[in-house]
Image (cartoon, rainbow, N blue to C red; front, side, top):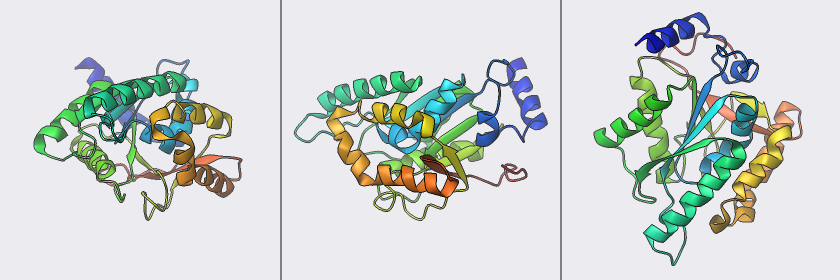
Length: 249
């Protein structure tokens, strides 16, 4: 209870810090400024391709990063059984997390058969609460992939129901083909971590990494970089409302 009270106190006292730009400017060598970051993605490779550069930047700075994969990619390798595909893709995710300096967590839903219910929401709430995050990333909810939508909705509902509001940011994947109607509120320069991100994506050998980059990710990094005025960047939409819209970024 004492740690929870301290978190509430620090949140109330430092809302201006608890934004994505604020956390990136924090000094994690100071225990009071070291933050815990959670990213919730639909499948192995989604967090890496969507915001891997930013996750790497946060982890490299000394913050704690956890990636929660809603599924283990069971349906993602044609001609392979779900059990075998899950084994392969889980290891690929673990390998990618090593490159990003992140901790992998697997939520246990099935690729292609995800759903939102009171039980699945409670499970995701528990997984996120266990990390006690200062900031959370997830999919933009307007996405052509049902699993991405489920990951997003479960995270949004966790945020809505959370007593201690954490900043919530949405990332994009395969813009135009999967993520639709995405207009970033925030941009993060990933020039220094672009190659680290690429290496993490290339851990997912079963998913044709060149094809992942061919699905708009290379152009996304370049275009978001142009918007920010740097070589490469990732764009995000910040959730507002429920007490989280009263500060600037």
